[in-house]
Length: 111
Length: 113
Image (spheres, each protein chain N blue to C red):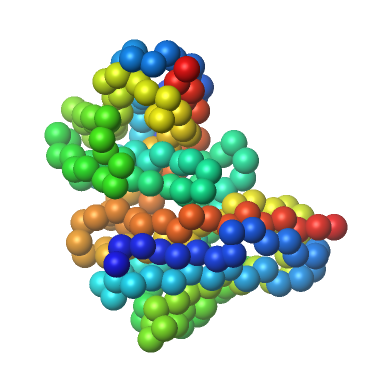
């Protein structure tokens, strides 16, 4: 998985609780992305980062925030999880901004 | 204009046959078109990609055909094998704009033995 790890790999939480997912890369790539994958919707971009402390919103950013304080780490936070945020979350990295490599994913269930 | 439309949603092919998955786009600024392969429980893996300056790119049994005037591109899997059974995603990007890939909704391929 191109030097990308995601943690945790599985998480079950309750509605209204905060959740933070971590993406860690060892490739020193500039760009990092968070996607969610849901049946019938494919992969949808939540947020992405084009450098340390530089982030931008994607297609489905409502209810999510991100932070990138180091090149290697990109955090995705659900401030108050809802059942609609039950999904599989993928992190991706890219050196050039278009050729992306994906991590193994985090399966999140919000009860 | 940002959408990438992928078809079919699912595909069943006999072992040894040709699998064909199609994608269409609207944004003429797109200049990078990758295909990803995803197995259950795994992340998508970059399979093959093409730029619009060529009409075809082949890597082993996988070929991308690109039709710039029609704004369509397709993935052909020759001599399909049961191990090719996976979900395939096309995507497109304007590599100069600093934005992210736009993905199709995926095609689930089953190769029967």
